[in-house]
Amino acid sequence: MEPWKRFRAHEKLLWARGWIIWLKEHAWWVSKNLSLYSSLGNHTICECIGLIFAGVVFREDVKGSKWLREGIRLLRQEVTHQILDDGGPAEQSLNYHRFVLDLYWMVVGLLEKNGLYDCRVWKRRLMMGETFMAAVTYEQGNFPAIGDSDDGHAI
Image 1 (spheres, rainbow, N blue to C red):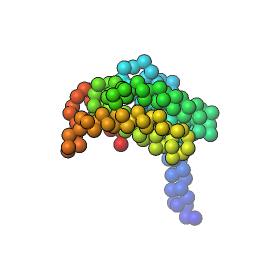
Image 2: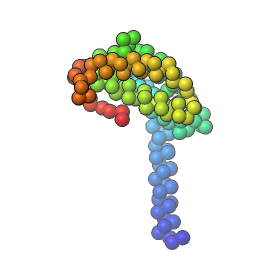
Image 3: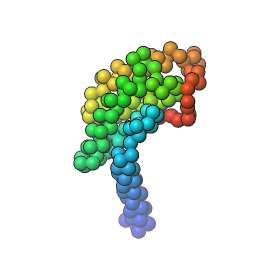
Image 4: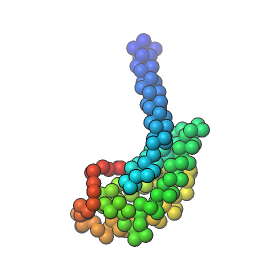
């Protein structure tokens, strides 16, 4: 192999290794700084999603499997807290409700496709949230600007 090609392959390996280290360090930091006492539930949901994704990547590692379990445990707890019995948002914000629903759907796909967790209970609650959103959504697909928003998107 020509020297410049070996260098390129080495450079790519270092870049990939850097991302892996960054992901692991970030997950560790998130696990130590969860927003568990905040009224802003979407922050907790985002952090849990991050722990789950890192936990899936590092599930053979003791820390990774702990992140996966902790993320699932907290999301299991939060699904009934964030999505009220009528399907509406606990945060009283339609934009954040859409954000939280999208985050949950994203992680449901990850967990189920990898056979890591049975999300049927979550999906029933998520469908209640989707029904609520459908009821307040205009024909064009938009919904009224009710509540706070930072215009963040999960997908």
